Amino acid sequence: MDKLKRLETGIAGLDALLKGGLVAGASYIVQGRPGSGKTILANQLGFNHARQGGRVLVVTLLSESHERLFQYLSTLSFFEPARIGNEIQFVSAFDTLENEGLDEVVKLLRREISRQKATVLIVDGLLNARSKADSQIDTKKFISELQGHAAFAGCTVLFLTSARLDDGSPEHTMVDGVIEMGEELFGTRSVRRIQMRKTRGSGALSGLHECEINDDGLVIHPRLEALFPHFISHDHYDPKRVSSGVPALDELIGGGLPQASATLLMGPSGVGKTTLGIHFLGAATPEAPALHFGFYEGPERLTAKAKALGVDFEALQQSGALFVEWQPITQGMMDGLGARLLALVERHGIRRVLIDSLGGLTRTNGNPARLGDYFSALVSELRARGVTVVGTYELRGLFGPEVSSPLPDLSSIVDNVVVMRFVEHVSELKRCLTILKIRDSDYDASLRELVIGGQGVELKKAFTQAEAVLTGSASTTESR
Image (cartoon, rainbow, N blue to C red):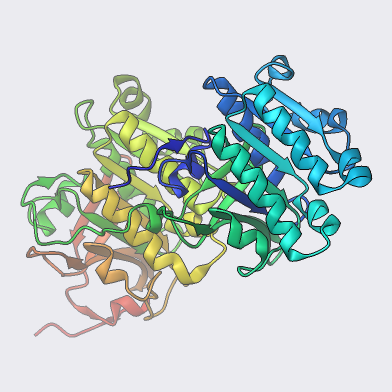
């Protein structure tokens, strides 16, 4: 159990990475190239801390004027000019550093910490201080003296630097924590990253985590598999069933989908995956509401499509039985989307979720190697909250015998798999559906023709005298 006193940064993702916040009275280095977000992180933390009743001293060792800094910060929602000069003091020590050296900077900061009664000290420009030091010992002495004065005053310290310091650098060895910020290119897409390089005597979520800068400042999205590392096992099977919204499908799978299970609908574009998903949502009630989490069809188009299938989305939404969340595939980050999905489930007491589609969700990912862990964490967390999940996945080929899995270890992640294909049979193009897997349950694996009409979905017995149906080109067999 962590008994260290924590100082919340007010940046939700950062507090999650630090497992509650910075250790009060400790010192940290925030490092990264220019433009990586260090100054925004520090000032956002400072204004949040002042809002919580703390006092902040921001000291710059750079030549940039405070007015220019305020101009940039004024575009962000956390910036409150009225706090400057009151709870937050900005002091320039650039001239002191240039003309009088490190010892005088230490004396200046000691006076200001005491005078301002600061509980957070932000020192921007550690690289400049390093360049003024005659040796590594001088650098260590500078940091040590500042740490001593700050700790005596009960003050938490952030040193900002644009240098990428090595783990064995004098700065790293002196501080309690190192936060590194950076940026990577995936094709033409730029992704900001943050990493807890060092957290002395304190736990933290390891590895790289995505972040972004928007109108609210820095937003950090911890990796979902790091936030929820304990995947739920299948030992505690719940025999309860929930309707898929299609009675004929419920018959095939033993009375409905197992409660708190995950089902994958696989098939090419236009085969009816979203149609089955709409019926699944249509079976929701205000007591057990549903969430549509979609990427390709906006709310208006989705509502019109549901209406054509005999499902009244407007009435469901008005009664509180349905919530619709849509996001374009060109925006967002995968971990941020997963966190938003879980937050909506928590806020509305959601009991069934349609993710339409998993392909749209993965398009926001910059690292294909972690998709398996990501979906395992997301699905397991939804199941742990009693949510029945249906996800769609688009197969590339309209016809053909090959059914490609979205992930190599798919069977360990989802409980149920339904495959849908287009079939050419007796000079007609038809849709077919088959059950590949229902975990811990008997099911009917025979091929069914999927018929979509104004009354919704029908599943008809078909292809009893045909073979090679799933190749897309069925051939008729002689009856025996």
